[in-house]
Structures are given as C-alpha cells and as structure tokens.
Image (cartoon, rainbow, N blue to C red; front, side, top):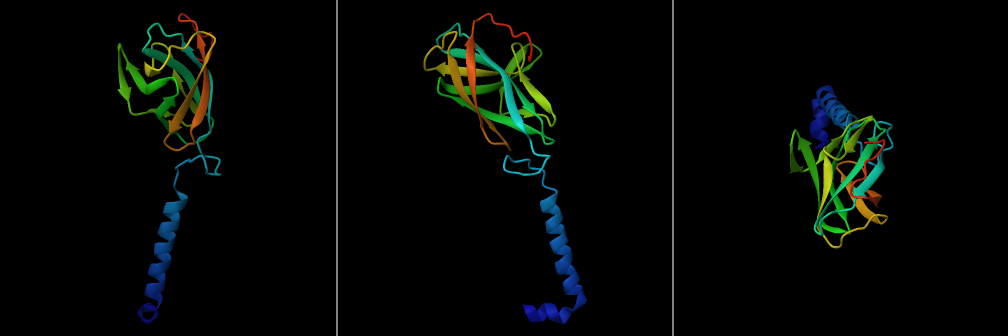
Length: 165
C-alpha cells in the first residue's frame, strides 16, 4: 500500500490530507452538547419550581417544573422515572387537548416550563398515593445531558405557584 501511494506522488498525499481535513472538520463541528463536553456551548441544565399537587385519585398524579438551560446547545427531555409510579409520561398540551409525546425540547439559553394547563408530567399507576408535605423523587433523562434527579415536594391539590410557572 505504501508503494502505491508513494508512486502517485503529490496527488495521493493531497487526497489523504484533504480526507483528514474533512474528517477533522466533521468532528469539530459536532454540537452534541453532551454533559461530558468541556465546551462552553454544551447544554447546562438545572431544575427549579418543581411540585406535585396532591393527587385526587389513587392511580394518577401530575407533576410540574421548570428546566433551565444556561448553555448554548438545545437538549430534549426524553423520559422520566420515579419510584412512586410504574410509568411517568411526558405530555404536551396544544389548545384544549393533551397527548403523550416522546420528548420536549429544552431550548439553548432558555427554559422548558411544565405547568398546569400546559406541558406536564403524568405519574401513572401510582404505587402509593403521595400526601401533601411528602417529597417524590424522580429522574429526568435527556438526549445529550446527564440525567438529573429531582426531589419534588407534594403540595395541596389546589396549590398555585406564585412564580416560575
């Protein structure tokens, strides 16, 4: 192989160099924003204003929170797990209808707001009915960033946040 390349001279050397530049360019333009990335453009996620209204049924509850992204790369909330429910689903509300979705975008330098009457979490098939004053643990999973564990306080069934939502 070495002889064939050497026999082709400058053209082969230029082709190899061009291929290396293309591959290097592809690698450096990757904007995956993974949590392990040391670049300043990576998603930088945090959670605030999390709460669960005390459920009115024994089988289902809702959850609300705000995911802030102080990084320059968007991410996506893809799934949620909790020890309190068999299933936690992500729901999008459009107009008067809600539907389960595979994920919700967390914009770069922005926030994803999950609120009553809007996008939210549904805790389905509750293993036990949480009471006001308790805390529910959940794990938020993202496309690019590391998972975030959240301790969500259970509020009264009629609780309305004054800010953050």
